[in-house]
Each structure stands twice: as C-alpha cells, then as structure tokens.
Image 1 (cartoon, rainbow, N blue to C red):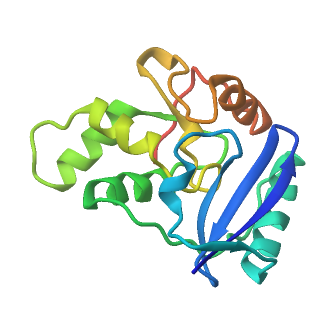
Image 2 (cartoon, rainbow, N blue to C red):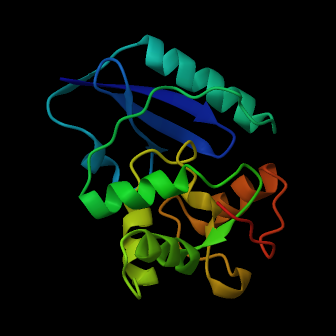
Length: 171
C-alpha cells in the first residue's frame, strides 16, 4: 500500500507519496505524470517521511539549502534510474544540460554517443521533483526547456536557488 500527503508551497500544492518508510513521489498537484509514482491502492496518512519532507521543503522554499534529505526510493527503467541518479549529483545553485548528462552516461558505459533527447525523456519522468533536481537541467545555450511542473515554476525554482541559468556547472 502507498500513502499520500500534501504540502502547500509558494508555487502550488505538492503531492507526496510514500511506500510507508521512504519518499516515492513528489510533484506539483497539477502535473500529469504523478500517477506513475504510486501503486494502488493508496490512502492519505501522516508519516515520519512526510514530516521530514515537509521540513525539507520549508527550508528550500525559504531560499536555503537543506542539509538533509528524506530517504528516497524510485522505480523506473535502468536507464531512467541512471539519469535520476545523475540529477541528484547536480549541486544546489548550479545547472547542467541534457547533453552533458548524456555525454557522462555514454562515457560511463563505454559508448561513443547517447541521445540528449533520451535523457530528456527520462528527466521528464522524474518521480521526485525538486529533491531530485530535474529543474536544474537546461537546454544547450542556457535555454530553459521542458519541465513537467511548467517552465514558469522551473524558472522560479532556479531563481530561488539564485541560479543564473546561462551559467552551467559540473556534476
């Protein structure tokens, strides 16, 4: 059984999901890919992982970098999970590109090339937004592209972290 709970953020209502011990999903209430993070049936319940996640979010939305993280677990394809693990390595306040992640994944697997578009599709299915910072991925040339929570929210999240989106960092 999965459990859900909610958090009212400055950018809209956020839905949280858990398997009872770990966070399995976090997305804005109006995102269309949220159902992918939950098994059926599910019920609303307050859990320690939700309390910890809400504390993390309160610190984050106050413009500070949380120094802890709730325990996370996610289910996806092997490729998606590799991409999501890369996302977690992007430092607070920095960005990187879909192409850079593709290049790093290709190198780790001994491949000459990997599709930035494939990375983009995996990023778009990130089940734990914000904490797994898919908003820190930008297009080539610093362009803000794709965010399942909406580009306006992506821009606000980057501004909250004081990111100059044209400056990409390293993972």
